[in-house]
Amino acid sequence: MENLASELDLLNLSTMDGYGSRRLIWNDPHILSVKSKIRNVGRVFVTGYDINLPHDDVDGALRKLFSPCGLITDICIRYRDNRLERRAVVYIVGESTVEKALQLSGSDVGGWKAIVTPYPFPKDAGRSITIWVSGYDTSLSEIDIESAIRQHFSSCGEITDVEISKSSSAEVDIDGEDAQDKVMELDGSHMGGRELLVDVVSGGVNTFHRKRHCYIHSRDR
Image (cartoon, rainbow, N blue to C red; front, side, top):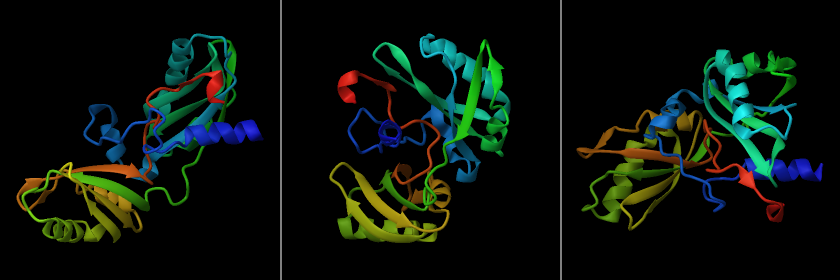
């Protein structure tokens, strides 16, 4: 159970943890699908593969297996001490993706049997979020910028905090039903004649693993 908890902690690292993780950059062409409604984003655990197989062999087999379920946006297969970890995480976007993926559990995949289990997002994911906003007129005072941001994002939920940074961006905490979906509808919108770029940096449902590299060494245990 301790090992399982450790694995889950690593898999759930936030973008702010400093373990080689990455921000969610919503305009990255590799993850534009994340703008889909969060109810259409799913992820599952997969076990059963030979941990001595090459990473690319397992990755390719999983992509082929789950391709009928929807758009595969990421597959994270952790690697420890020159061997694959026993469990992979697959992110899929589409309708009923998890249900479709679970139906494939037990499938023969090139000599090994894929065991698929759910890996649900936290129940409040996408509701209580932190976003970064940039693109606004930085010549305005901090008070005017905060006021404009609060008004612009008021339809997304309760804005509990706004912090204006010196790096031409603002960090905004929002809490409300479907907050992430509503926020993403405002990405690319205009505020005061300027086009906004909105990044969800915490609390959101993502379509890729937050760690840039899914490789760890024994010293990281």
